[in-house]
Structure formats: structure tokens, C-alpha cells
Image (cartoon, rainbow, N blue to C red):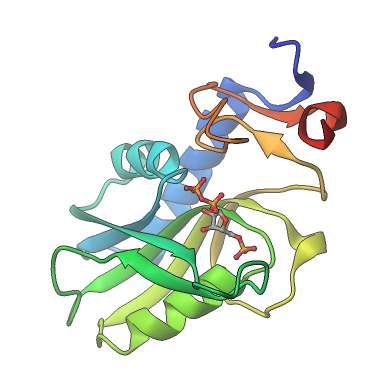
Length: 178
Ligand code: PRP
């Protein structure tokens, strides 16, 4: 284990099992329908790639990126920095996040994507950090709930590091407190 890490929270095997469970839930809900996975860059690409391969359904993939609203950093306000490449009108859209923390990003994205008239819209997150929630967001699928700790790996970063760890780990507080 990397010296900056306190402990492993979820191993590769636990992650694989959780994704298979969630893929099964999604497959049961959507039956044979085609799903468009709308993935929020950057961290969620790892989860989206594994989820897509675990889904026994036709899947389309598109991506967007958000960034803090200019002059409002720390407020939780975000804007779309990179938009989808294609229309989602009439499609069954599943928004894919690596982590839902305050829920403000997900709330904004659900509102924005609803205006584009998909046939259905639901959200799926790899990690659900419920203790930090400020917005009551409809998160239909989640792999794991986590406590209010700084976690990295499997897409999640600290200053762009650790995303490629194949497991999820708690970062030592002294690393991000300096
Ligand atoms: C994470 C995550 C969500 C957001 C959730 O992105 O992917 O977009 O934070 O936080 P919230 O629930 O408090 O709104 P991050 O800013 O870490 O970007 P990254 O995926 O590029 O690392």
C-alpha cells in the first residue's frame, strides 16, 4: 500500500462484486432497453467503463465535465465546462458519478439534463458520502456508502494523484492538511 494511505476501504474484489450487483439491479429495472450512460469527468470514467462492461444491455456512452461557477468557488455552484456530444432526447439516461458528496453537482445536472427531455433519467454513483449531503438528490443506484473521510483510488484523486489505484483507500489526513 502507498505510504500516503491510511487503510484500504474497498478491495478490487469488493469493487467488482458491488458493480456486478448494481449492474444486476439496473438490468432488472431497464429490461432490454438501451441505456445512455452519461459520465461526469473525470473520476467516474473508471466506474463507467467497468459498469458498462457488466451491463447485459445495449449501452451508449457520452461524457460531460463540470467546473465551479466563476466567482462563486466554494458555493457548490457548478456549470457545464464540457457538454455532451449528442442529444439525449428520447433516451433512457443514467447519470454516472464516482462520488456524491454534498449532492449539489448531481442536483444541478439532474435539473439541466431533465430540460433536454430524455425518456427517463436516473443517477448512479460508485460512492455515496451521505454524511456530507446538503441537497436531497434522487440517487437510485450506489455501490457503497462511505463515511466522511477523504478517499482516493478507482478514479478518485487528491490533486490529480492516486486515480489509477485499483482499490479505494482512505488518505492519511497529514497528506491533505500538509
Ligand atoms: C466529484 C464528483 C462530483 C462532485 C461531487 O468531482 O465527480 O462531480 O465531486 O461533489 P458534490 O456532491 O459535493 O457536488 P471532482 O470535483 O472531484 O472532479 P473529478 O471527478 O474531475 O476529480
